[in-house]
Image 1 (cartoon, rainbow, N blue to C red):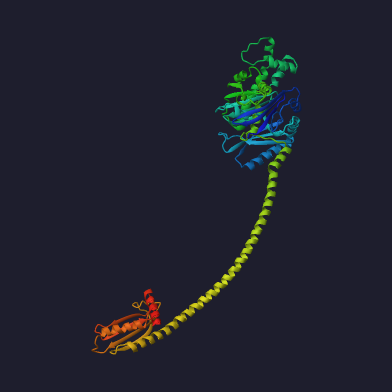
Image 2: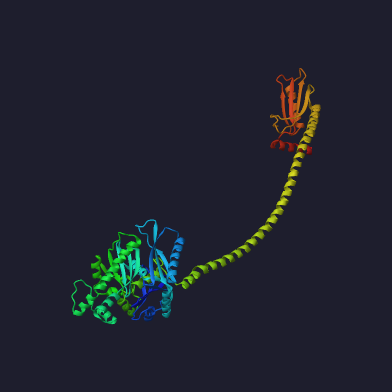
Length: 553
């Protein structure tokens, strides 16, 4: 939602307050008040202004001798360093002229200036700002900030003017001061407040016609004109018009010198003004645009930004007053727009006490609050982390106990495994010794019982060895029994006898692996066997079946 603000332009002859909000690329006015005053001073100006609305979030325009707007060219430096540079410059001026409040902003990048920034620095006396604050409190208002009236004028032009690529001078002619800005396209090149205004015409009439200020003002409004070649209905019209020609020349010189000063300040020697726009109460003088156009050689016209301002929310009385004071209300419109639109180009001058208060509530307070919250968070975090640490320590103690038990079990298991390996090796050796003896005894029994009468054994050996035929592999040697023998010469059917003998071996040694062989001549034989070779499932089943049959028999 757009912020509702009030722009207030307090002049030496008239004061204007415009309230509303900038939204949807235009300003929506909701309140307007204006008043003229004959008294001098800020207090009299505020006393004449009686708005029917509360001027909340007021952006007040300041101008005149107690406002100093200057330009400083600085190298491209970080923001913090730029703030320090401006602080030193303001401090130096403050030492010379008393307490001042200030603000600064960079001008848009200027192509003619490379490697440097142009800083617009505005300063105002604290005493003047205090008078405005008192006047604002008298109408039950609240302050947003002070800004140079020229910056308000620039924002009115930027948001509601017809922006082209040309260079435009916009002048707000007040009673005692003139606020001037020079823009190239949408970019601000120069902003300044000048001493002089419509009072020049009034003083010229009073001096030349020997009349009072009040009569001179009446003659200025009713009888004077600056139109080239104008015809005068009465001699008084002619005398009054001729009386202000010198003042008009002074005003023309002020504007021309402003262009020259801009060239020297921002170092753009090729600067050329393409058109001039006028506003402010002094711009209403008949024929002034035509006179200035003749002197400056460029088109000069009145600036009316209210053609694109939404005013439907104003009361009929406020709308009528706005129509009467629309030239005087241009700066107030720019100030209100600047305060309502966060993207606007702005200078925000704050009195020292208010600046410190806002700095505290806008920065220091939140830093303190953040520090308190950070401390609270750290305390809570420390409590939570300590609880987690205690829990982790408890779990670590339990895990350490489990680890010690596991290490003890592991060491015991390792020792048992080593003992088991040693016992296994011993058992393997004992198995070989016992197995070899049993295998030999059983074979000897079978030889004594089943060896054919015409067969005799020449050699009987038992050894740990490998034999591929018996499926005993190397690295897993087993007790193998080897029998070598011969047959008596002339033995009938030695092959049949040998086959019967091997069958007897197989029957007497269930599960044994046997590798028999008979010499081709039949007079020699050999048998390699082992009871400790690998057994397949069928052999195991046959052994179990044979054992069961033997048990039943």
